[in-house]
Image (cartoon, rainbow, N blue to C red; front, side, top):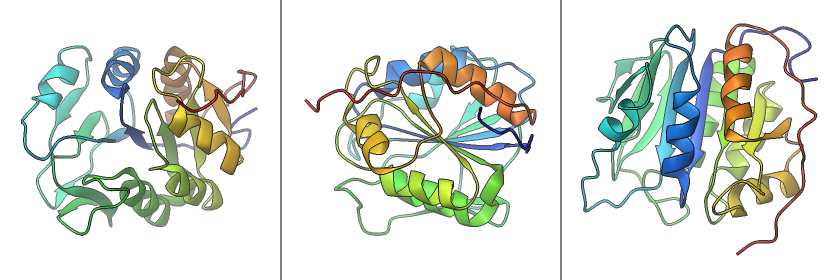
Length: 208
């Protein structure tokens, strides 16, 4: 059982890479309009091409989806998508953007968001890793777990590119490996301070 302590987990940070757009769309589709949590998303994006990602995601969810400006206050019911070529981190109730060194050969990277969320909000954080290649987000997910937060991954067998969730399962004591539908349900319950069944498969799919 996840969150037996009934802690309100109202800061949700999500990382995705290859194959992540469709996973994000399906995840956001499953969230309610009145979700009492703020979601912050890092998707590995090209620094050169505008993809209209917030518009694409916003068409399929009742939640407000935006690219934040530096220093914006974090609000429940809003989805914040990291802009291209900028890291996005959480600090003292706001989101900060910067063009610091690339991590895992990318900017934005997932680890800066996850680590900063763990430091700023501790047990209030839910970290989610979706489809992707490489290991970005794994160490950040470990930080979230160590700070008392909840760590979740997309079931590798469902992910188009299972490397990221598989590596998290190998390297961290992940709380749950769920389908995208299950992740949406879990986020909704955790944001309300409810417990979540963790009986989903935890198998690791061989890396591609």
